[in-house]
Length: 293
Image 1: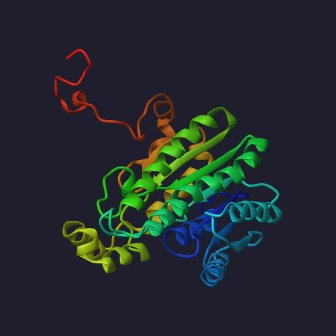
Image 2: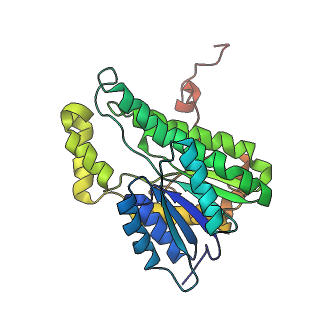
Image 3: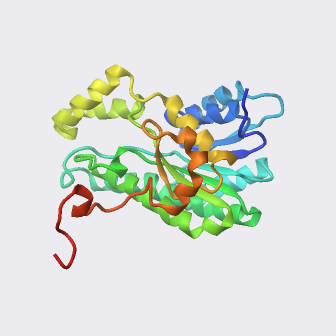
């Protein structure tokens, strides 16, 4: 069995359920030692036992409850991980919530802010904590979990959409900062996942999230959504040596041919493919939009 993460050590946030737990499983199967963190200590302990059951002799699984949106917690997570492992190679920033649902002017403001704190600031804090270590070793992989909100408007789920767009632009910016340091920073759009978060959308109802969106999510729920394994496999690829040199990209687990990207690294390094950019009239075949028109 292929083990592309053999002898690599990874920190995975939001790892007690859903996609985070699936990534932890995939990482263990791929040979990695993993350090799992999430806010719910009881669920996290069970997730650790789940991941450990897949480990081969010599592999290590550690867990630590913490809130990545708190600077002291993010710093402690990395510090304790470095006590467990002499070196870290991969950070997977998966922790996230949807936040409040409903018209932007009506939802609870503190809930809106909380979504930004967890989804965006939590990932930034984890990067700040681990990047100095990566720099010292001249190598590292940072994987940000994005979502549909990064590339499409999500009316009535504005905190989630804004935070996920910001997560991707932060990854692009950090990737440029670290381009010559051997540290790759990329984002994953995992697709519509049939997880607790989708259940939260459906439970909110059409009055809060909009009738058309609710109906679309209901159909996706019935169809099973994007398999968790697809996003987890992409996370393995982005954490492996096969993706070395690819940075600042947003890759769709469901739609992009990411398995073939190692053969396209020169194209990816020299273009803005798989990045967030503004669309201008000429991109849509219109003959106006330049300042001299």
